[in-house]
Image (cartoon, rainbow, N blue to C red; front, side):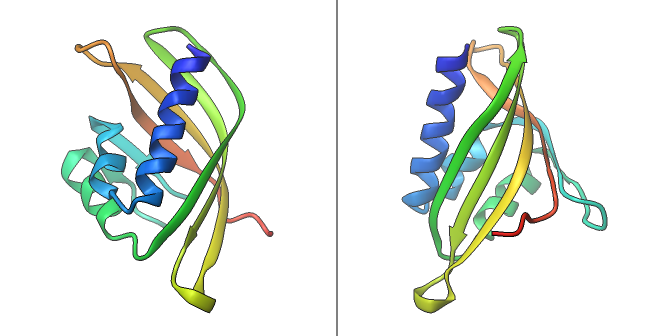
Amino acid sequence: LARDLDARITALERAFARGNMTVVAGYYADNAQMIPPSGHRPVVGRAEITRFWREIEHPVSWELETLDFGGTADEAWQLVRSSMVQGTGRNQKPHVVRCLLIWRRQTDGSHRIHLDIWTEREHT
């Protein structure tokens, strides 16, 4: 299970670095929810999640460091430190948060993110 989740994390990082936000969005289940810090509206369902990721401008890199994980083969959780860089030239800005990802096994046997909850930005 840990190897499978790590492989999915690596694939997310690579897709982001290539600027392929449609692939990034595809790692989320059709009925997934993204819950940002308070004061921001949740992102719910395939259309909204795809729109959220496609609105990322100038993706550069994304590093997801697993801090802890657990659960079962059908529903696993993963706590990660997310270090995302986007922007161009001198305007590149790191965005570092902690995320709790809930992965759920789909009918095709793959794991997709069912719930993505993240914290306020950490100071870097």
